[in-house]
Image: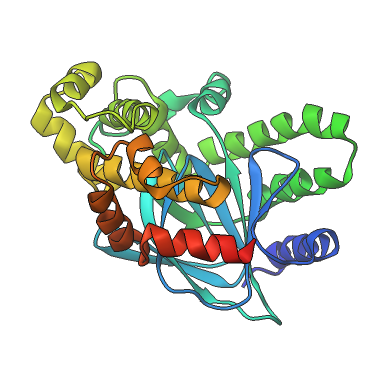
Length: 301
């Protein structure tokens, strides 16, 4: 344990208890900052990380990526370089000591802005791709601006709008100049294989409902089809087609959660020609068919 880190951590727990009561998933008034609270351990569930920094404030979690499993706790942080599919399971959580985590999302543009004022040439790295998740030890230098960012929530809107981008930049500056700098630069630096795969992921995400054209995608990224496939799977653990399917189903789940809409219409909107195939694949990924999910949501309402 790190007593200095725990001082910051307990201050954050107290702040969130007073503000939110530690209940549910919370999107804060800072658009890139959100919290997740669980009062009991969970089963594995499928998610899609966006480019972000994640820390656990209390409790612990398992993260499944491909065939590997990672466990992290309040003394580690997770970085996702791009949209990365994973399976997560909350391991430690109770009503007395709920699981509590926060996520700070960022964009490649945010990283580029920070890299302008650093010296990435100091980082000697190979151009081969690596998995799109990075774990490392959390430290006070990183926790300090995170706590200040969260405490901005108690300030006027004008303060939040002006100061939050500056603190986000400070957090990224620390990450770029830490061990994670190697990881961040590989995905941000033009011409690296990892950066090319980020472009492929962005293209698939922006056109997820359309039929995937691997030849076109390979040409866009200036890679051979075989190299695209191999490196895409290294970074995301999925093939491009599997990745697109996961994006479609995640989008469908979101539609069912926030809109009053027919299931067959959702299937067509996310790119499925067959509602029955959509239902089968939805059930396989989320454990329940879309009809049951929709019914549960309506009952909750």
